[in-house]
Length: 353
Image 1 (cartoon, rainbow, N blue to C red):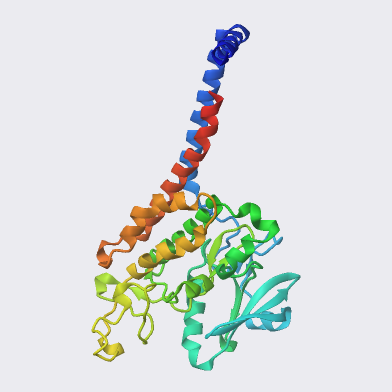
Image 2: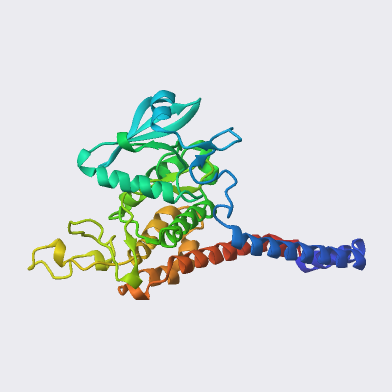
């Protein structure tokens, strides 16, 4: 009986749909597939934040909120007279951060918290001025003699609150493998920028554990990642034989790269002078752990991890020289995103046939 019904349905389909219409339908589906392929090819180049940030101004200037024109960085006088503190929203070893207001715009005012760390504060200011780009929080002004920095305020805060933010009803629609993977691509793009910055190869030293890494970055309202804390960015210059050490204390744990650990065993007490320096490949070692946090445990995240297995295994090579560059990691991430988006789109087009 079932075979007979199937045969009748087939006969009805043949009679109701002329061959010309079937050909046109097939051509339409093929065209849609071609357009999808071209779109995703283009998408693979433009994933993450756009290449050109139209809101960036010339060096020494900024644009904020609805303002159309670029304004010069605020001076000591302007900060003292035009900026109003509202409340303290964070405090670290180097600085306190206050939610503040300037011309009806919410801004972040950072002030030195520990007078013994003036050099770190001023180094962070120098980096912030020199590295202004789509990857770095926007500088609005500073007062060096008062150890004060004014930057754009991002209400979603640091990446430490990412999971809590995505649990909120208004953001649950963004809690997908695709959006989470885009954040990981943003993060790797920032590492690539720091390793190829206008100042040279910079190492993100404030990264001894996952919480510390996440506290250095901000989540924007349109769900992109910006680096915010640049107090510990030493310069590597391999051609001049210049390597770095992240601080003067012994580092421990599995999160830091093997070359950051004391190499002489427990029987030899730690001495900073005996600790060998290292290069930017310490940042590469940490990428898999940070990306694992970004991906979370949403539907599809395990498939992303499966595709990332090889590049992440390469990042975890014990020999730093065998690890890939940030450029290689970034390119691989983007290729995998494009591949996964194609795979996600193709089942629907196959059903149309």
